[in-house]
Length: 235
Image (cartoon, rainbow, N blue to C red; front, side, top):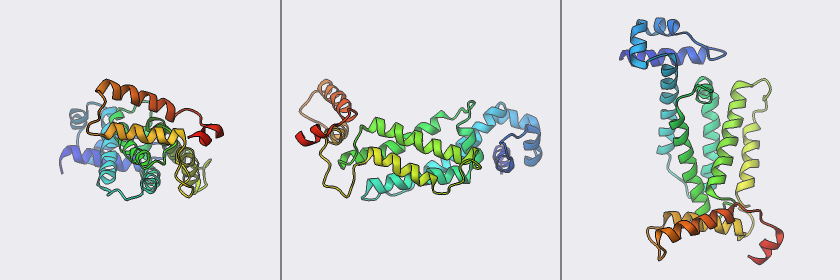
């Protein structure tokens, strides 16, 4: 095992054993069996090492999500993705705390996770079940999922309910996904969101690129606008 791998493994072990996520470089070096110069040469400083630990953990998590074969039901995949996110946070509390700490340097990791979520929501929009734009749905689902997972990790004594994540999940998805048991949703929001997604993925259209951009801008505004009962009756 290389010195870099030894240091990463030692830091991960110490972080998982630490109640507050605070570990010293001396303890890391002693656990890894290397000198401090090796740590600084590989990672620059302690913050660089912790960022590498987070990236390594989340890279493994994201590779697993990318390897998952999408089912024929994008809503089921959305629920499964939420549950996998929460499960990872609970299984790797030190990684998760660090990812959301003010000093976190792994913003790219969060962006990759958001892109994977967005791809599932685009499938929901294409299926005609998304009631807001993909952009808004992505922000709502990501912030809610990360928020409840973080509270379960850093405040477990205040959030002891093991079903909390599922309750929040169902509440958020109920706000962005139409009732699958009801007849196909033809509300203005849902139709606009579906058409926006289809335009984004279409190989070509009879419209110019500028016209497509303008059309998608209008559709995003429509998909995020409040829908009244009167609008439902006239769509």
